[in-house]
Amino acid sequence: MKHRDEQVPILEFNNVIAYRNDTKVMDQFSMRIDQLQHTAILGPNGAGKSTFIQLLTHQLHPLATDDDTPPIRVFGKDHWVVSELRKRIGIVSPEMEYEILHNLKHGRTNGRGVVITGFFSSMQLFAHHSITDEMKRKADRTLEMMDAGYLADRMFNRMSTGEARRVLIARALVTDPDVLVLDEPTTALDPVAREKCLQWIRNIAQQGTSVIIVTHHIEEIIPEINNIVLLRDGKTIASGPKDKVLTSKKLSTVYGHPLRLKENNNGHYIELNQDAS
Image (cartoon, rainbow, N blue to C red; front, top):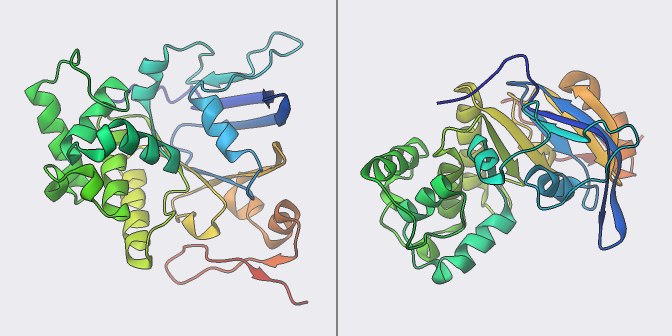
C-alpha cells in the first residue's frame, strides 16, 4: 500500500555540498522531484550520479547548511529510519547486484529468496528473519509481474544478466514502494534484454510508481519521463520539463562536446551524434 501525499515532494535537495575522502563530490546541488514526476538524472561519468544515490540511501551525508535549512528532504522529512525509507524507495543498481551476489554465499540463493530480502532491507537472509507465507506469495506475484516467475526457484548465480536484473527490480518492488530508482538499468544487457527491460520500466511508471532513472545513456530515457535533471561536476546544469531541458545545446554543455539529439519512432531517445555543423 502506497503512502503517497500528493502535496509533498518525493525529493528536495537544497544547495547540497558533500565530500568523499576529502574530495568535494556535490557542490551546491539543488533539485526537486514531485509525486509521479518521472525523472531522469543525466550526466557523464563523474558528474555526481552515484553520489546522488548514496545521499538518497544515507550512505553519504551532506554538510549542514548555513541557515539550518535541511539540505535533503525525502517525502517532506529530513530524518528517517533507513530501513523504513528503503521500503518506500526501491533501488536497483549495478553495485547492489554485485553486493547481493557476493553476500548470498556467491549466489546460492534462488530468485524468490533474493526478492524476499527486500522486505528486510537487507542484502541477504539471516536466521532471525521471520519469513511468512504471505511474503513468499508476494515475492512470487512480483516476479510474475516482471515475467520472471520461472526464476523463483533458480539459483541467482545461474541467471543471465537480464534475468538477474528482473529479479532485482522485483526485489525493489516487493514492498510496493512509492518510488523506484534505477541506476544505469540496462548496463550489460544485450539489445533484446535492453528493450524488454525498458518496457517493464514503462509499465511500472504507467501503473502509478514514480520512476527515477539515473544514467548517462540517452536511450534509457523512456517516453514516460517528464522531468530532466542535468548534472556536471556535482552541480545542476539544468532541470525541468523534458522538452525544455533535453536539447542538443544543453547536452553539449553537460558532456563538453558538440552533440545532436535524435529520437526514434517509439519515442525513445537514442545515441547522441556529433554535430557536424
